[in-house]
Length: 577
Image (cartoon, rainbow, N blue to C red; front, side):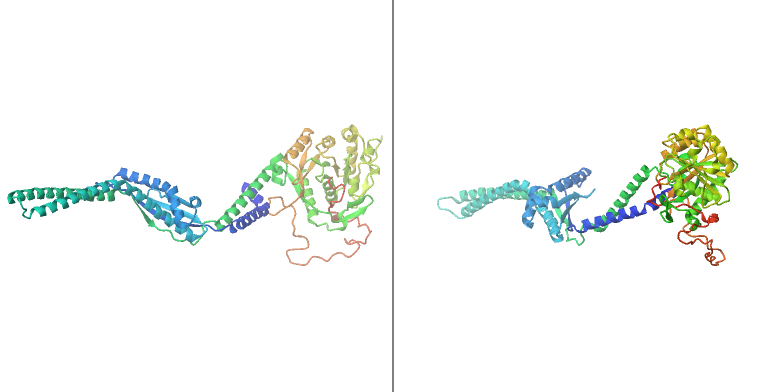
């Protein structure tokens, strides 16, 4: 049941759900489709840390990852962006907003991402950033080894100079010299040659040291290479019009759903028979749909609804009142059922119209019905039936021996009589609760099979509760979609304190909608005039009993089946009764 209730709520508010979804999707599409597209280019660099001669260890791997994170931050540094800006012609401040770097998890790869309105420029900036950063890292590491290499090269050059000088001396001593003995000359030559050999050994040692230094330098440099160059992107990454439109539609749907949830949560009005049963545990006798102002006429007191004795008595409204009559008969089964009160919790719920129509359909069954207008504050029945109100119920209270027959007014139905309220007294509640009212009730019971009382609303005045205690039962009329559950509960509590018997509730002014879970006491399809045999409906009557009468001619009051209902219209002053 709860699932059906939620489905009914969704169906009832489907227009708002659709409207919210369409409006949000349209707004999202218009906003994002007008934005300038932004393209994203990505280049990837590989960071390799210098490894030890014995091979990489676990600590080397961790250090390598830390270096990658450090490099990702250095890519966005000022020197790198300044050089990139100089190479590409883009201001370094703007590059700081366009370029981003991120290390791939558990790898030595760094993604350099660039977003720009030009796909070619984005790819160029991404590649240029990777190249500039790689060069700067290499230059920084090479600068650490330059001094040692230069010192060794200077030492090698000095040794080479000494070798050259000593070699020249050996060459001179190889030639005989005047005044120098040959033995002494050869001995000097041998000594210089020994020095040359020593210098050459020293030079070889320095050259080996320089070579080892260069090898060590090559092994100790952290290499940064461009692993995956960026290419100009084809599709923009922002705005994503399709995705944003879908997200906007979902947001609009969620917002509309939230509004509906709030409205339904705050709305505590009674709109269905299930809600009546959950609120007060009472049964629903029937549901009367809201009807408009067709079938009115101008009477002695202005525009008033007329009896449908000359209209279609098989309308859906008439059938709804007949269903109320049928359910009321079942609810009164086995109980005293001569007198009943028709009232409402608040003004404007349609109790007077419901009372008059209920009296009509009860009279159609052939029972003698008296309709008493016990609302001696704002009487209505004499207006509905276009009757004089010079004397009535209030007049009986001042007579020593009241005669009911002299105050009952005739209606288009011979077995339906109306007792108007009469002149308005100053103390209606005291009159209705007096002993004289008991006497008047006894007289009414003697003159009719059913006596209906139209009374003021329950809440606000004590008239209805005082009268309800004296009658056999009460029918409570509520305005569907207007009467709140707290008001309905309070009205039932008032009847309970008066020890009145509630026979049931009539849902009035029901706005039936498909799928709303309401009671369908009537059908839009006109059942009458169709049968299972497929034969055509009988022709319309053309005799004196026909519904169509000449203008100004009163319909035949002997046709009870045609007195179906009363019709309200908005411009009728007493419609809210």
